[in-house]
Length: 583
Image 1 (cartoon, rainbow, N blue to C red):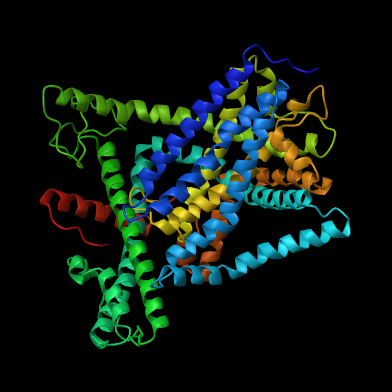
Image 2: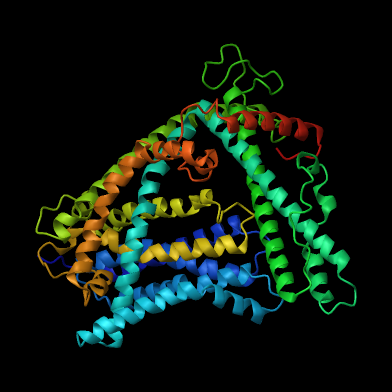
């Protein structure tokens, strides 16, 4: 039976959609302000803002689409919004953003030359896309169905299937990692050990980034010395010289790095192409160094803060002699962070006491409760993904917990929440994985220091998974079609119409792999595999490609030991107001 729309339902849809879109816009604006480095230009900020906003807008569009379907509302406006959202993100993720990424990365001296470099280096990527489109055109022509609508459907299906395949792994990692990170943070002892380990890793990465930057600075300075002032490419050398960081800026950090860069570099930069290569390498090394230095600074602050929470006053002016793990009998329950001066004023001690209770008693309990709740939600999500095929690829029973939530909704507000909450959690987990991809070293998001290249890569990835996440969620809610087997949401209809049954069945069956993937992550199977590979390929393989789920032997880890030493040294440096050193 069909559900009739209650009075004022269309107005209710607007009352949900407008605030939801506004909230998404505000969140993306804050994220951009939080992550973007000051040198990111307006074009990059605009592109990232549009990409993130459209990607997160599914949290507003999908609940509205589900509600319109349940209450048989007019969906022409929703269809237009879906078309705009989908095809703009499609164009951004497959064409515009890849071009913009390499344009920002190019070292050429003019905008036209940088655009040419981007097109040339994207040639293989664009060639694969064109090949797939040509293959689709050939297949559609052979079946006598070659129209603009069928080509659009083929492009939509191909992109969405690819996004589902890749997005399932991003979602799965987040479903396991998000609750695990929150649970670990609740343990102040393990939080301290993990903070030390991360600081040790960040210090090692900063040393490597410094060596790489110093080499290219030496090449730039030598080139400037050997190229005559009246050389035909002296103008290019001058541009590189202006962009080269001054060696004096690294005084105090030079002692830890051996002066072995001579003989490694090729100083023969007398051709414009060589100078372009030098400038590109300089920009890359500078970008990596600044980003890594920011990560190191964050790791230092986190380690010092974690030590303060664990010791809870042991090193803060003699305020107590017990830690957060113990009852402070006879000690004052006050928290002072080494990262800021002691709180002054009439209520200073009261605020420190509140901080002690929050950081040492209340926050750990709340974090554990939150981790348990999110872990349960992750289990429900894996359950829904693993049983989706029973209703989508065969005539089985509907056992999806999300379908039950939609069915139990009593009014439009409840229906919106029944869709927005699980979909929002899935988006959080999937995009959390994209934000954590920095562990593989090809890009990283660092608060206040994320360069243009990293922002554009992340924007392209978020655009790539917006529509697949939407379709994946809608397929987990078969209760939408109860009473009418032909009922379909607006976006679901766009995917179903003209798409072969094999593609639809694949999209329903493939998520079953999430059950095994999440189980492997939860029980550390991949870490054990990488550990086994260490004996053959060396420890660097494990350090670079790891899922950051190790809890064992953190104290014996060399990075943890280094992190302890560095945290102590940086704390002394802050107290003495001296310049910190690398490593």
